[in-house]
Length: 309
Image 1 (tube, helix red, strand yellow):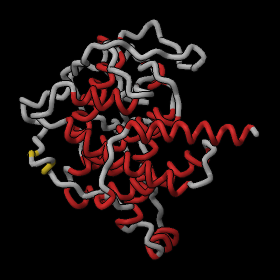
Image 2: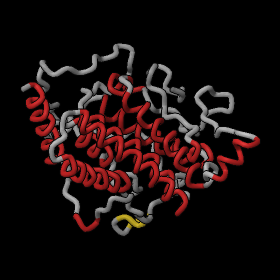
Image 3: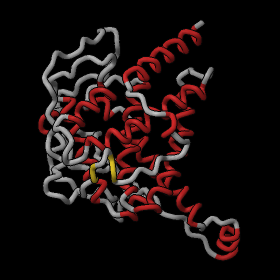
């Protein structure tokens, strides 16, 4: 009985999630990452070095009545030390980990007979190295999304929807950076996507939805691709000032499509996303391919300039 109620609850949450998302043509979908070009809606994606593209400028949220929240719904408690209005305003910089960081992951080095055997087994092939690097990159993403800090800072309820939405944002940040490396970057991004897809299946199953799993996965895939394109569009120089905020409100904060609130959390997250976007663009490709980078640290929100987790 409890399992049945859990499944019903998850299916209701999925249904609400699907209802909030814009539809996307099934012909444009594939089980592989779409190799989208720099032409989005006929507009050219500008370089982050363009002085007119100030990605860390705070986004303005349209004032409106905040949606009501059922007091019975558990949210992470507010941190009284967090001043969201002052966060994520520092100048962006590379997210690459320093050479002496204990968080770095180095390629294993073997010698002698073991090295020869591993070479014969293609352990040192480009594909094998890419798969290992992609695993590290995805661990950086889940480290940021699964820990309670991001929910504490932005006062979010930790549900499947919010976690899924945050996963998409951080996946987009990585895939958009890899796009700058051309075909090689897109191919590497495919490995990250396949790891993400497998992880998402496990998350959906763990949440209690085992029936019609393939149906839900296809619907979540549509949402993923639609959001990727929408976030790209929101970062164009000609995009409306509040376009990114609107996307974040709709995908992360809103439970029922309510009007956007005039609160500190939403513009703070918009600044966070913009800043991480620019920081990723400033991060060298070696750090990206090896996964030796870390998103902005949120464990201690008073130290926003610290980027190590």
